[in-house]
Amino acid sequence: MLRENTWRAKLFDLTLLIVLLLIAFLCLLPLWYTLAVSLSEKSAAAAGRVWLWPVGLNFNSYKQIMGDGSFFNSFWISIQRVVLGASVTFFITTLMAYPLSRSTKEFRMRNVFMWILVFTLLFNGGLIPWYMTIKELGLYDTIWGLVLGGGVPVFNVILIVNFFRNLPKELDEAALVDGAGPWRMLLTLYIPLAVPVLATVTLFTIVYHWNEFFHGLVLTSGQENYPLQTLIQQFVVVINTANMTEDQYKRMSELSNQTLNAAKIFIAMVPVLIIYPFLQRFFIHGITLGSVKE
Image (cartoon, rainbow, N blue to C red; front, side, top):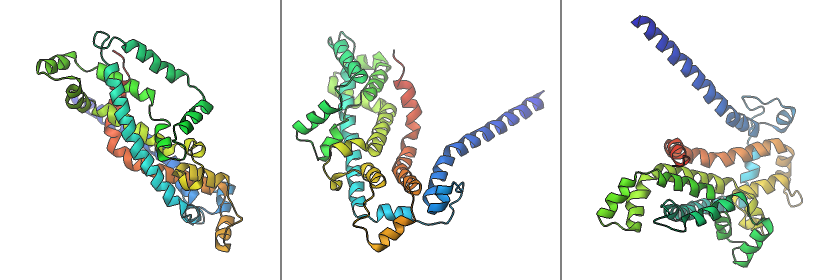
């Protein structure tokens, strides 16, 4: 009986391993395929002959994208946007979530502000009023317009609120007995305990600011102020051949929108793929604890 149970356990482990390897393969396949297309020649990509390996290996798509001097300037703007955006969002969402996680006895207007917050999650003022507000505040064509234009993600605030509310009430009582005020409780008690959910919302913010291109399109007046995603999007949509050198025109003739789009997607994925492993261990824990309302 014991041997039979051991054999069944080993068979189950083997089956589970095969299933997990299959899932991992299916997750990695789109990334690998995108890289293969971006490294293939124009005719092979257009004919759909690319599968797991590049056909007619070349780096023309990446040369075309990175050969432009504005690429590195836009890359630096995107880095600034991610760093400033993540910092501002972390600061604002944490300060909003802490009082909203208190009971109505501690914060009488809690429900009023919570409903206002939820209302903004469901409805917004529209694109034109948002644009006019950004411009009237003098944030147009600045890095702060890109950062503050979406600086308060309400969904992240609600995640942190629910996480704070799920912490044991005895922690508050013990801190009050020790003479801790609200600021000390937030900085020394709540923030250290909320590392999983804070890491999760930080990951959300990083991905948002890195991948978002529309704000760069409407809040900047020229290519020199474009973030990376906006620059690549514009480069793919509008390709100016009038000022190209003979060598650049030759490289463009060897490209297709498919190879350029694949290169664009792969370049956009690399920074997030680098950051994600460092925050992944907090991701599931933070989502689970922050998504359940007490």
